[in-house]
Image (cartoon, rainbow, N blue to C red; front, side, top):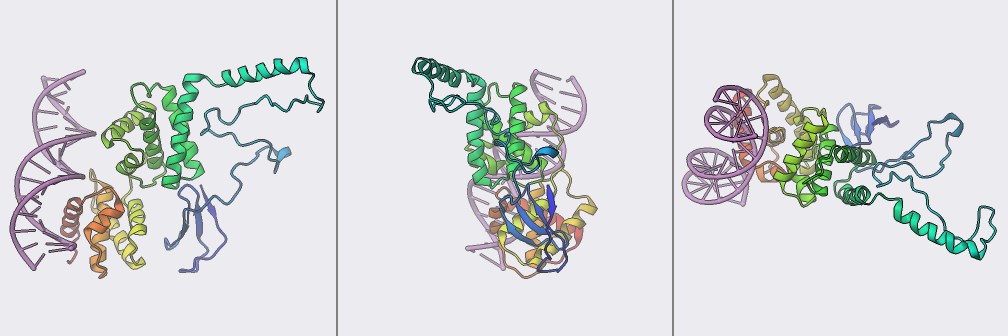
Length: 302
DNA sequence: TAAGATAAGAGGGACAT
DNA sequence: ATGTCAGTCTTATCTTA
C-alpha cells in the first residue's frame, strides 16, 4: 500500500517521502509533511504476475466493482466471421437472434441488477470522497460478501453499500465519519449505523480501533494551521494516550480538542466552530468536555 | 461574537432477568 | 429475547466576556 518515493522531503531533507496509495497522499515519514493530496495512482493499475507475459496487457483488468467482474463476452455484430469473410445471409438472422438472447441471459437478473445499482452508487461515492482504486475494490468485495450472506434482505442497496464503504474506511484507518458517509449517500445516520454494526457482526470483520492521531491529521489538513501547532496537538494526544483517559470516547472529539488547545497555546485563533466544521462530526460541546479533561489531567495552562 | 454552562433527550454497550 | 443502568454525545437555550 505504501511505496518508496525517491525524493527528499522539502522540509526535513530526509529521503523518506512515501506514497500512501490507499489515501492518495504523498507524505514524509520523518516529519509528517503532506506534499500532495488526492494523487492519482501513478503506476499501472494492474499487473501480470505471469513471467512469460510480463508487461503484456491482454484484456481489461478483472474488477470486483463491475457487476460481472468485467468478464463478459459479447457476440459482435460486424457481419464477418472469424476469418473476416462476410457471413452468409441465411446465417445472419440466426446469429442476430443468438446475440439478442445472449445479451438477455448473460446477466442473472436479480443478482446482477442489484450489483449494477450498487456499483454505480459506489462510483458516485468514489468521486465525492476521492477514494482510491484499492478502496473501491475492497468495498465491492465486502458488498458482495454481504450480499452472499443475505444481509441485503430488508435493507436498501445503498445502505449496505455505504456500510461496506464505511467498514473499509475503518479497516484502512481513513477517518471518514459515519455521518459524513450518511450525508453523501443520502441515508439516515441511524439506519447506516445499524447496518454497519450488523455487517461487522455477521461478516466477522476485524477492524482496528480508531486512532485519534489519524483524525487529527485529517482535521488539521482542513483547518490550515502551522506545522508547529500540529505537532503540539500530536504531543497532547500522545500524553493523553499514556494516561489512558481516551477509552470509550469519540476519538474525533479528542483530536479536535487537542487541536483547539494547541491553537491556543501557539497563538493561532481558531474557533471551536471552525474545528467542528473541519472534523464534520463532533460538536462544540464535546470539544469543551474533552478540553476540560485534557487541561485537568495534563495540567495545561490556558 | 465566541465560549462556557446547564439541562433534556437519544443511541448504544454491559449486564441481569 | 427483553429491560435496566451508567456513561457519552447531541441539541437547545441562556449567560458571560
